[in-house]
Amino acid sequence: MGAEHFHITKSSGEKVDFSMEKLKNSLQFSGASDEMVEEILSRVQDELYQGITTKEIYNRAFALLKKKASVYASKYKLKKAIYELGPTGFPFEKFISGILHYSGFDTKTGEVLQGTCVSHEIDVLATKNETLNVIECKFHSEDGLKCNVKVPLYINSRYIDVKRPLESTRNSTYKTIQGWVVTNTRFSQDALEYGKCAGLYLLSWDYPQGDGLKERIDRLRLYPITVSTLLSNREKQFLLERDIVLCRQLIKSSFLLDHLGVSNGRKQRILKEMKSLCNL
Image (cartoon, rainbow, N blue to C red):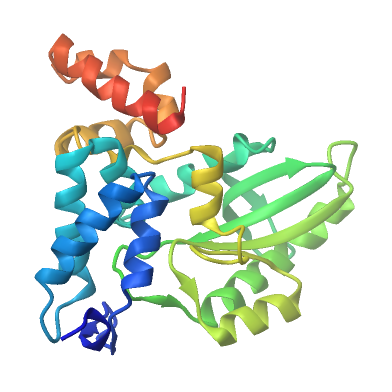
């Protein structure tokens, strides 16, 4: 039976036809060579069975990639690595702030703004080109959950409350104000329609098309430390608690690996992995 005739189970529980092309694209995204990709596709195809979950397919491809080269495996596991920033969502806010910082924005996290009615803690404030962007992040720690219309509805009401006082105190640092909704998953169709109608800027894993989180992270080489195949979960947690969210940040603060008691040889391997991911 050809691979295209297998039904797989998505994280949402939906059963769909298996797409060898999608798996191929995700492996190519990791940077693996065409020869390596074809070898892994052949191995995974031999192990398919009716009803296999996307998670199982992912785990098998990841294990094969990791044997070949840890850097490719790190890039391949990007989506899963962002889920691992949880469960609080706070590191995700820092992650978004970091992406924007390296895109030329001046950023602040966790600022409290007084609204017309009540005060609000804003996830990220980012200024660029005389525009103040008021950014709220919706983090999901589970795969398969979409960001529904309730999220932009709620965020827009908060944004409207803080916008009027901000407009009355505009100064030389910004001339216009823009509300954002950012999520690590996908928006439902209603959420997209409402967000666009309300004038919010929407950013998700794959939206805007060609400029979603996935593309921005890869283009800017701004990978979260959770992509590392060499750091343990305990070590990742230690670093996240100290606001080290990006691989770039760990390269600059490598002394923290000494605090963790990492041996010099292992430290050099970790930093080599980080630099390779960042293309430094």
